[in-house]
Length: 230
Ligand SMILES: Nc1ncnc2c1ncn2[C@@H]1O[C@H](COP(=O)(O)OP(=O)(O)OP(=O)(O)O)[C@@H](O)[C@H]1O
Image (cartoon, rainbow, N blue to C red; front, side, top):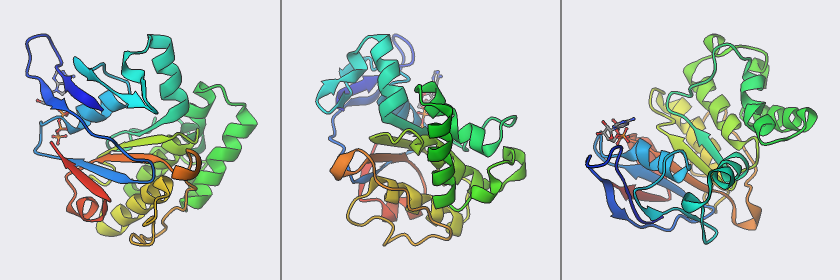
């Protein structure tokens, strides 16, 4: 991101104040800061759901935040995975249907989406819950399912908003290990041997994925490769 600022309304407080940072594939970056400073908003801007009021989001050197709507939608669908706060799974869908939805939206064939989704659920240790609905699984399982959903299209960027927010230490370790494994950097999972941790293969070519986590959680801050304070 380059010189990035965002305001929810014209004349409203500018968040981030012209922030620049190069996120690196294979690296897990934790974004932290006091409540209300704009951690979630920054993730939405990086995820192309909000448009910066100043500055740019660049992906492989391309100013994707300034691209026309259709191109932004394509980048979001194919290259970015998002873990929403509190998992935010659709209560009416089964776990597997929730996981494969982004792949179907990105135009994948049903069989390919199911294969990718089932494989991820297996790796994350939640395949036994594939046919259940979110009301029938634990908070830790729901967060791991949300990580599967974010990874199903094999994106190069994974953005996670407070993914360990309401979890105990073991479940937080599991979710963090899954995200570290997704990054595929040198320290992946080895430092975070959480219970039931996933071993999601790193995508995005040999350099792995770029993983950005908005968090207050001291456990995540301790184990992230780098910390960016807002
Ligand atoms: N949709 C919105 N419209 C207007 N203002 C908003 C909107 N969403 C958030 N804000 C405001 O923008 C600021 C940043 O909010 P944001 O949720 O990004 O902060 P945060 O650092 O993630 O906070 P927390 O740690 O409490 O989750 C806050 O002042 C918030 O009230």
